Image (tube, rainbow, N blue to C red; front, top):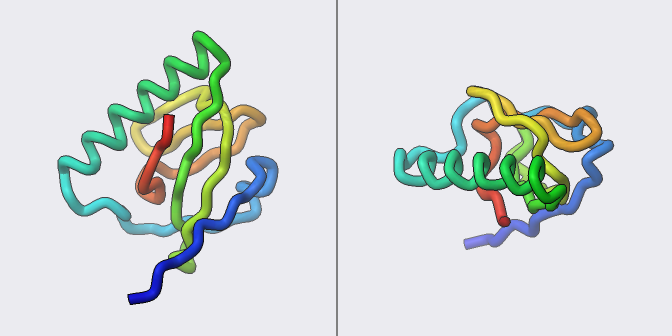
Length: 96
């Protein structure tokens, strides 16, 4: 089994990336945890300007991560400080 290294990417470069079209998390429990963590990160960002680590996959199945403040969470996307947008379906972890 090959373990992929997570590549760090600056949030200003996220607009240049293409994301997966399908949901990365297949377990409903994992989806619930991700959603809970996204909303916790949103509250931390808005109230305390605290950054979190967002880990996601690109269309090429390459794992990447960025550190930023989450400013908005919608049904399908998150918005990071600086205006970068990441589809929730591509996010596999949020580290608070």
